[in-house]
Length: 153
Image 1 (cartoon, rainbow, N blue to C red):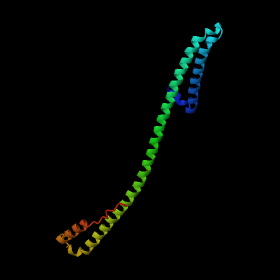
Image 2 (tube, helix red, strand yellow; image 1 turned 45 degrees about the vertical axis):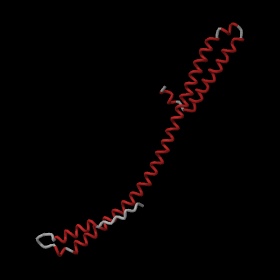
Image 3 (cartoon, rainbow, N blue to C red; image 1 turned 60 degrees about the horizontal axis):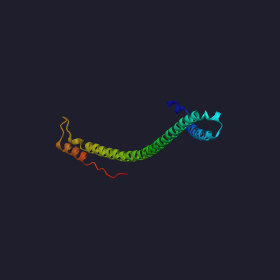
Image 4 (tube, one colour; image 1 turned 90 degrees about the vertical axis):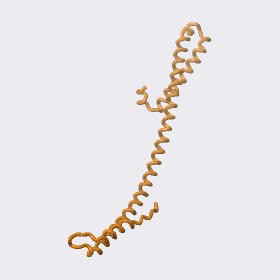
């Protein structure tokens, strides 16, 4: 059966339809052979057997082709849904990247503000590297005052 994968589907459909029609034609010939001369009636049984095999093979092939077409339709529908999901994911990623850039800018601004506050309070830090408790308070306040807008764009 795997050899049938190498045959194009259109050609396979034609072959299955021809097989079914030839089987039906031979079956009709097997019935009409009763009205023929006696020497032709000897071929009645082989013609009926061949026609039965062709009809069964044609029906099986047509069912196989129909099932394959149904699965191919399901695959195409799934591929369309995947493409739509990828498109929505790309749109959402650009929105997330935009919000991320805004957040990075806010963090950068807070960092710059903290550095300027520390530079202004540098006089309070003495030469022995002892940290004044007020400097610790300044750093803690700078870390707490992060103002995220919270808006999703």
